[in-house]
Length: 160
Image 1 (cartoon, helix red, strand yellow):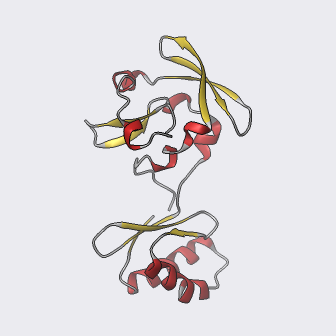
Image 2 (cartoon, rainbow, N blue to C red):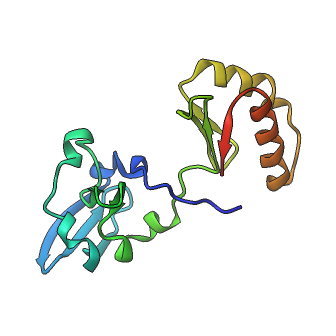
């Protein structure tokens, strides 16, 4: 099953140092620079998101966020206001292949594309090392299923 964005905003919460506005061209058009690659990219605020542009409240929570990340309180999500014209690097990104929740439904970890666990939860890290590390499966789909079964037996919930 393919990656589905839940619009939590974390993927872009630290990209303000990477994506930098170099020029405001007017009418919601901007030129931005990717400081890592040196690439410049023209972006435009999506017509249905222009009302979100003036609200800079997200930077109180995430001071280093991408300059085009905004809270969308009407829809209860965080969104990219230049989504339609976002750079290719943003189009290719998916932040996890499996999302791991504890019994209370709180996120405790993510399995990244290359079968790497990202977590600060020591119990999950121990479970991963002891049980998931023993799974030998070449096929990604079957590996995902076995990981889901293993973590579910250990009391976790897993989302794709």
